[in-house]
Length: 330
Image (cartoon, rainbow, N blue to C red):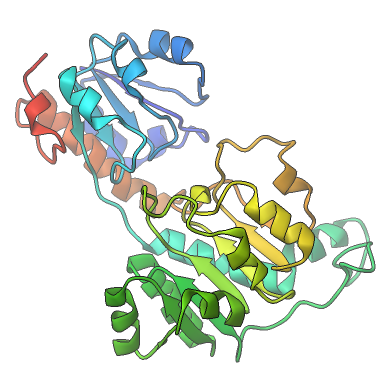
């Protein structure tokens, strides 16, 4: 099969042990994204199978209709709205789903919480300029960092990642306050954590608030300006899940208004994030380039399953197919 791996920004996939699963196939790894639909269609038209790195490239109906040779999209992790599944089925394009792990994004979440709380990045950057124990040359921003013990971590969403982050907080002596579905709140209480009395209480009581929700129609824009306005002026807002969970423009305005006082972000509405993004101009924002799952062990987990799905499909034994009605149409 002719196979393309898309959006491997760091050209890391070819160095994975599992890459050898594709031996015997014609494989092209693309390291630079193409955003225009026309250019993307021309680039991908020759390929029988595509391996996607999460949702870095969207596949709307208009693009799928222009890929006449495509028989399989092998997804690293689960499909999360970036592929028009109905259109893929209509055109006979099978979609194979993979697996993932909550470990790396949970660890990154905790790393961001610690780094932002102790102001590690500005301290380290200023040290390179000869400034000792200086978080900022702006006196207003040159305050002390703070420890986590005794403070409240508010978690919205108590799935696999939320549960791991709650465990880290417990180890650091934090109070954990959880909001989400009734089942999530009950599970948190059974694990020895507190369920928030209300959504309003979650935001108002948080010293650190971390989002761990799936993105869907029900959760898109679920965090409103009035939620952020309830946060303490020294609170930290953390989002390693999806930028679209927050109403567009709400976080930027909230940070400029001083509630919350700071943010640590790994996800953005448009990725790769442009260097002139307004978020990057806000000095109280710690931003990382969507590194949640971008880590050696996670890549091996994600890509091994994705490549195995390609090999099985090529052998006429399709597995883990989201839309089985598409198999064999082409």
